[in-house]
Length: 527
Ligand code: BG6
Image 1 (cartoon, rainbow, N blue to C red):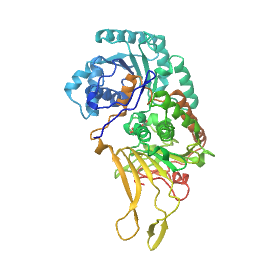
Image 2 (cartoon, helix red, strand yellow; image 1 turned 30 degrees about the vertical axis):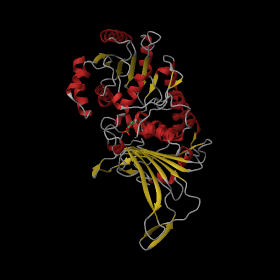
Image 3 (cartoon, helix red, strand yellow; image 1 turned 90 degrees about the vertical axis):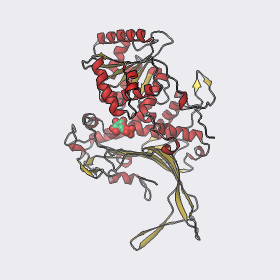
Image 4 (cartoon, protein in one colour; image 1 turned 180 degrees about the vertical axis):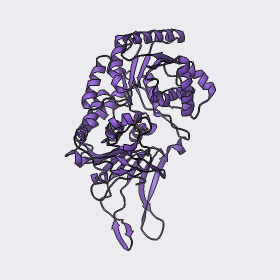
């Protein structure tokens, strides 16, 4: 019989043994007041409240927990509830009115000007009132889903109003920061400094929603739970690693203003891609705990080197007009709220080295882009070929045929879509000759675990309620990741690019292929 076991999680310094886990044993997480700053925004309607609703429906949200939307717009609790009713209905495939009725009575609205100290006193009073009414103990989560320029001010004001420190020693106050955390190394450092004046690092939860994806956590489970692969994850056996986060969408409506300031390097590469790299490359931690895992990731980040001038290891791109799903689509510069001579990159590819004992000499190729042919986030670990070449594949172009060694073995983590893991191997093709054929040994989530995977935000919100920081970026990780991309940020800011340089619906500029040595390249599908 197959069974599931959970990781041995250190609890107050004691190791709990593996326990059998079953989804039917869901118990509500600790109750808390959850305050969402920026509650009129898109993230609240698209992700945060639908995730909280789903957690409520599935029994994870404590029945006593209250959710307070805090934003500048004048609205009432009633109108806030009505707006979210529509939003959650649109987002949640399992929406039903009975669960909504149970959920909605927790939702409240509190208008707030982020810079006005008295408004934080009003918020404090409202929280005390709700907590008394709902029998809450005063544990609080402040979720900052505002524009990042308000983060430092909100934290400072929360502290001044006595909201950032737990009221009683045993109680807690936690602050969640949406991405992006900083605009570059200096601003990230300044934000970390100002946050640390008001909050202890144990109170700080910096979101990287990729870490909330089951398939991303599976990288750790796969490496640490199977003795057969971990010994191969090093320079002796691995030729190179490819990490791709491709999107078929362009800049979604309303996001042009943000994106044109950010670009692909800041938006996805500095956070999501480098976090994926860390999970593939890190040493096994002594236990799966917040300190241990984050220490190992930080070590990987500090070992990352980009060798040589920026143009030799990084490539930027911007899409021009092209096609998406067979339909013509405009170029980036024609998108809403994008400058018509924009120099912002919508594609980045880079070759990085992890210069440590395990990975020295193994290149890591990373790329992300908008308006590529399909949505596909995948990690391909390409192994070295056998030392002796017994087999050859024949490739013919017209009448001219050439022989080449068969493709190397590869382990593919399909993060999304078609979530799963594939191991590509060669086997003998049945018949009278000693011919080999490539096969795919695969695990697919939809076959092994039918049903929808939880949204990344659901998992991360539960972890904030539990106080588990394992899947959140620590201050040093954030700064190290910014330091890695800094040379490219400054070089590109100072040199004009000839954009657009790839058509919408293609795999990015050709220059991205030249990051590879001759004979290898990006593996877009299969291997
Ligand atoms: C976000 C970026 O962090 O990640 C978006 O800001 C991007 O630009 C998104 O589209 C991709 O996330 P996912 O989960 O769809 O791969």
